[in-house]
Length: 193
Image (tube, rainbow, N blue to C red; front, side):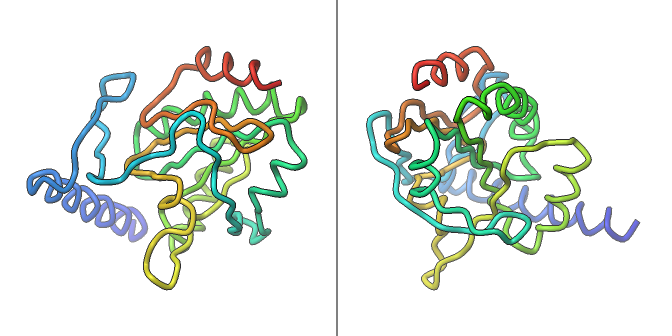
């Protein structure tokens, strides 16, 4: 019961902050594929198709370091998505990501989810992913000394879910804020294989 109340309080705080930003003009909204509004932080420009992604190293839920550059050297491509445990459109997109992961991981595509919830939510994220039997690599974004996010900020994440598909050279082949269909993502993955 105490955990449920804490989760409710955190959700309320996040909702209140997003609502305040929306009212004051600090957040805009876009509609996800299923017409769910996605709160967007104004003034952040996401990477575009044709851009080369920045390198980064952060830990996953097990504490193992993940490095984008070395992963790209070993794989044919990467589907990287930014999400939050409090984001309903993200949770609706995760089964699509998982299904594609099961199909294309053996063909050289790495699937990486970057949780923007922070390390205090590590146990809740791990429990959620285990409960849902998701097997993609789960990273936790970290703060730099200047309070910027180590991964989300250089990747231009203004809302969740944000999805990128990268070829083996780290060039963005697909970029989207909001949900994407399995068919749309699969088409891009097949193009880079």
